[in-house]
Length: 165
Figure 1: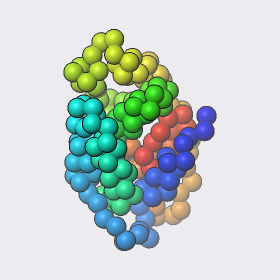
Figure 2 (figure 1 turned 90 degrees about the horizontal axis):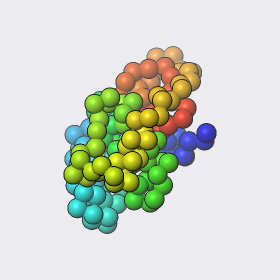
Figure 3 (figure 1 turned 180 degrees about the vertical axis):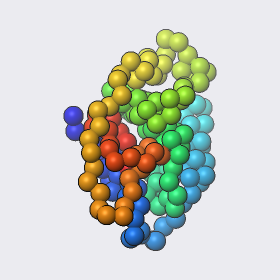
Figure 4 (figure 1 turned 90 degrees about the vertical axis):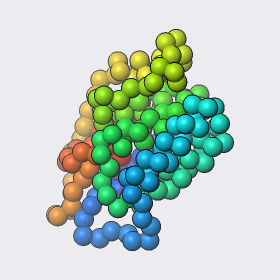
């Protein structure tokens, strides 16, 4: 399965924390979290214009992070990407992003008021729960560089779901 190009773009921007780092932008996980929270609230109130604006602001902030995300931050990102895919009626991408959120934070869940039983978003979540964790592949890292995937230091990346590198 091919992963969407945005996954690789964020991977290049985020994954490797090493000797050289672009200094032309800065963002903190707290700032990203606020943008993701705004996106979540906008989706819950069905304000898709505000949702898109907050999603875009979060997307712009992501490659500018000055600190590594926590697994919970990564799960929040994946959840917003799932909401975005769901709004675009791409239930496969929604389920894969929800699986990524679950892999990042096993305690992640959707609030029942947003996705009650029988709702298509709840079905996408249930589909994500049923998916096995993604297989992983090794990543060759330059000497002295570290890789964080979904907020966890590792030397592998998922191959069948989105991941924040």
